Length: 112
Length: 116
Image (cartoon, rainbow over all chains, first blue to last red; front, side):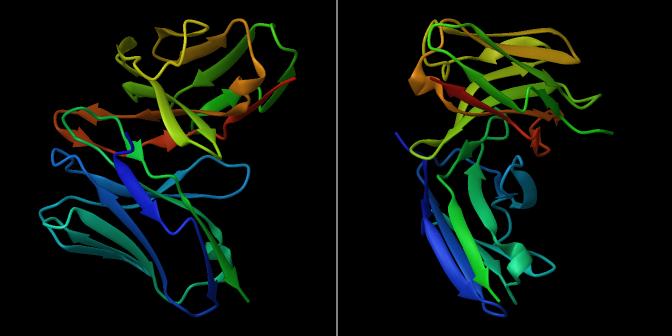
């Protein structure tokens, strides 16, 4: 059973545009929602994370929006740059348990 | 800190052979995770250690897979015998977990395993 559904599978955005990646979860016990960024040949790296006591968290050009009632969260990349081209994974965890469940990933290509 | 160190980076082996993947977590981290990444299934948790003790190995696909963490600075994932369907990128990650906090994983660069 896939507990975190991520969409789209791939995304092409023009430089300067907004990239939006969406995730939905099923387990209401999840209370920690990170996003990871992975470049080819590298392991995923933590980008930004949110807990459900807030509806939005912003770090630079990256924003997580969180909708607890809908059990959905999304990553917005403002002013997308070619260097943002990577695979992005959403994840979720019950922080009392510590293991992350990952979405299947979104390949983002930002065209120059 | 050099981060999470995995070896080898690439491994090509013949079906039926034993494969051992190695991981050195970040010093001071108390949790270690082994994940497998494939195009079809994404990132799958294989096993989770806390303070060197296996806590959850429900993701280990078969008895052919085994993992050990003899001390806080070293872990191995062994596949014996290997099969072509084991071909994937295997990641090790470590984290510091305290109470109800999940403080984020640090992943290694992975081992790309090809079984022919």
